[in-house]
Length: 259
Image 1 (spheres, helix red, strand yellow):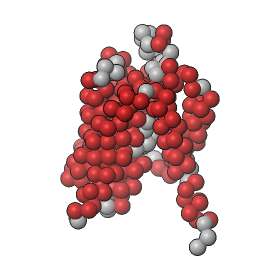
Image 2 (cartoon, one colour; image 1 turned 180 degrees about the vertical axis):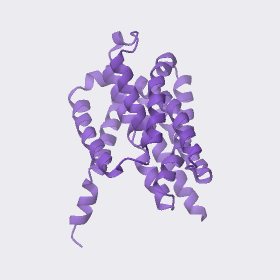
Image 3 (cartoon, rainbow, N blue to C red; image 1 turned 45 degrees about the vertical axis):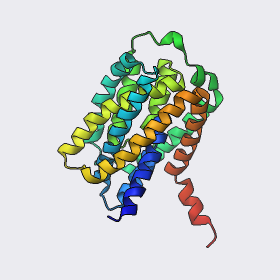
């Protein structure tokens, strides 16, 4: 590949790593880039996990150094997510991706409303709930998120944030920290599944990982410095744009524009 292609891949990884660390849906940047470079969709899906792995190693370490990481809580909630991710990765080639994108887009519209109308819950959290053991419902929620994350990855951070804030009780900054730990855990299991199915292009994946890691480092520092209110607005913006993309709004606008 030409040198500028490598730079473009690193830039895409940086954008994805930054967005994923603060919110989610960064894979909506990297997956189209990998497919544009000629990777089959399933190989692009597997290769994308290499960047996500290094991104979450970096962001998890950064949040831990800043004292924002609830390691125990994150590891407990990682267990159902890991189990779900193995199942999701196994079925990744069997589901209709176009239909799934529409469903996810609709769910993000609902989530956008929830984030907008109840800001206090997202910014302050519900600290009195943090010492409780995970309930069966919470295990089910994080198992389902793990299935989705193993399947496609794009947007999983948004669903994890919703589960961590609304179900567990973290504020957005701490939820982002724990989210990255959970994604790190289930990305390892999902990546192994893709590796066993020979669906990882390591060369381009490692180049992508450089950008992902740099973006994650920058975003983790910004999240801690700017606080939960800033992160909430980033999440609102990312959810709105992601929903529009998944529901085909941008494609429709392009089709109807004159000329």
